[in-house]
Image 1: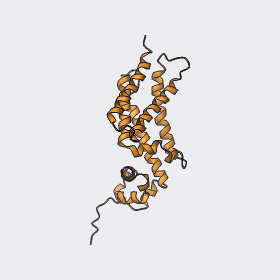
Image 2 (image 1 turned 180 degrees about the vertical axis):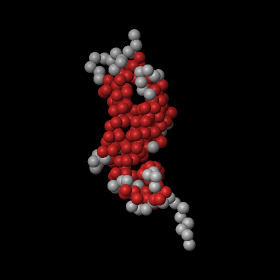
Image 3 (image 1 turned 120 degrees about the vertical axis):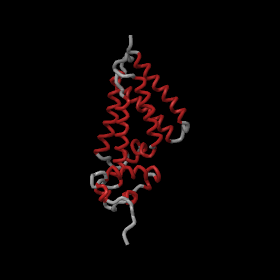
Image 4 (image 1 turned 90 degrees about the horizontal axis):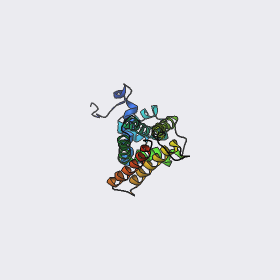
Length: 210
């Protein structure tokens, strides 16, 4: 009798999209079952590939988790680019768009966000070079963009634009943690708080004007 199993097979991915498919399924497993429920064996079963197939792309579970975190940082890097944080653009609109998109990402992908910023990876085994590079690049792009905007403002003596940019990211991350951890369960409240954060930053930036 012919095999009636219609799940994906390794041959389906001969164009090289297996890694992307595995990450997509891994993200779904992470969302449904958490880190404890995610394994390369379950991932292979879910993707419909052989048990050895995931090992061609991820050395072990730790490497898979690092790749999921790196994927999240790549998305945040894209948000920075899409926000167009540039002095020649509408600064307030750009900041507001970025903050809202950041909060939306954290609230919709809390498990992946925890991986990106939590102790599981950064306080355990050494993270992969891919994750370290993507994470630092994502933050550096944001810090450079906001730091460049702040450098045009008349800041108090001794104020470092880069440090202010870092503080603004820390504030945004804190808002996300309050939302993810259930301390603030009303997202509308969080968005209103984020609006105030944007107003504070815009006020500092506007001080550069005569």
